[in-house]
Image (cartoon, rainbow, N blue to C red; front, side, top):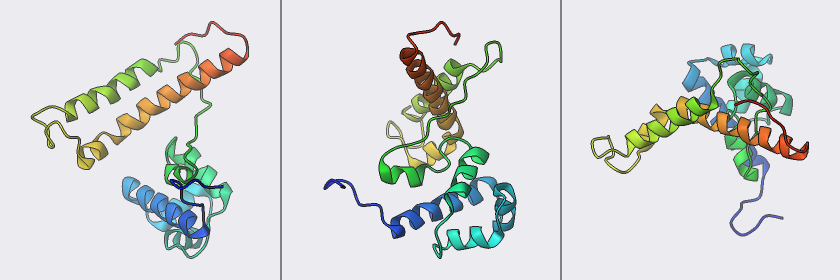
Length: 163
């Protein structure tokens, strides 16, 4: 049951979240309905109907969105349940992936936005956030991988994996 702070999940709210997801993907990647449908292995009509809120989007297509566009792609939908997906990706030792670097790059962008000389001065603007969104998502994904790894190791009695 939803608390006073939470709104219940309804078909209308679900469809509105899917509309936001489709619009954001099309805008961020410069895709038409047809191009997005090709990436998601569905029909352009499916994308058009979801984009306009005419129908609900099949959960399999939602999963393909997350797979194709990465962690955070379906966050507007998951936000209704106040959750988000965690990647299960675990970089292989020696792969060159450095979670610390991704986290530091995101933090650096945030610190720059709070500079007195930045667009919003010490206040972070939505425009500034949109500008560093890729770094924020990469930093979040890096943290999520580390958190998932720590949870797996804690459940398995520890471990000595590399970072």
